[in-house]
Length: 377
Length: 91
Image 1: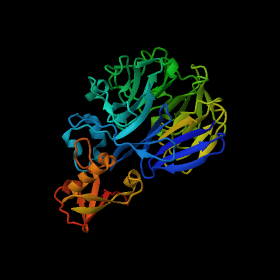
Image 2: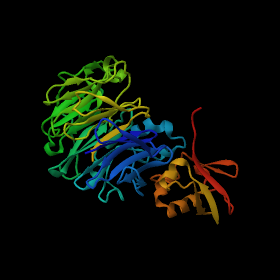
Image 3: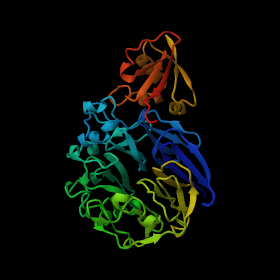
Image 4: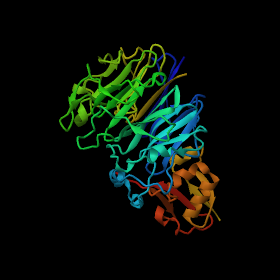
């Protein structure tokens, strides 16, 4: 059994392969393309999403991680779709020729790709959800999500109004979840026709934001086979739900709690991931939204084995480390024992082959790392 | 009327490493449409959701820089070369 890591950076994708999870071969593909997300389908085909401020959003696919072919189509809004005014305001600085003045809605980034029940889903900014049922050859907007009431009032996070998290239920193809910064977490129970906010028990990102759709969800993880037990890394801390997101409770025992810019205290961070065999959950806390680096400069992953409290894992991780781990940059290979990997904003990949007990540097010298996915081959 | 088009490096990835393509058209906009028709994978890189040429694309033709909004009016002669590049910033 071998492992492959797909690492997204603003300058291309690093492909890392290992037969023993200790020594790694590295390749760097799609050079020049910002790589924002990847996933793999049930036939073993890997998809990579790219976006260029000059040449738009596209998808590449490969069956061997060496030969990449661009797909002819990618998620796109309709010409008549209307954009979110706050998202336009945020990205206007890059709109040199006034394209946004027409009020349109544009796909400016694919934040996440997710394969479930034979379909490929893409979460994008400006926030929306698209599906392909022919392995990326064509894409359709999921209007139930993209046109839901209240959307025009959603407020973007600093990275824009992005749909960055998609989760599915292995036992129910009609149930799915999507996370949007900074509008919160949404669930459908009818195959995408209607969606409901699932943010009860989670504080809005700022006190003035709407209580129902003002949450800045950063990531959510779960086991699709036991889909209703969920763990959520929010701007306002880490939460757990046992009812598919209907309600959330704070779960921060053992985590570093730091001060946010508005004076609230919680455990701030971005990514989360679960090792499905053990049920262990991993997060990477940062020192609040002011500093966004590990508290005290000690890079640390935190693990919860019991779904109730957390323990720090630092063996092999550096001190005096003032970088961040971004939303999509933590992954698990789902082997036994579980392998966990993360990439930093300063271009280093760390990996563990013992559920986080010890860590090793897998690669360095990469650009800012925006996404990491791990696959057992 | 045939012209030669030089692709930027990232789009050469899309075209299997090809640096130059041939296309037909009497204006830069017409050439871009012809390229997209012949090579469907390029279409989404040239045109946005509203069918407009992506605003950060810049063309070099006959010693001049041509912005996207000028592409329809920029006339070409047989054998011309058009370089597709993008707006630059920094320094």
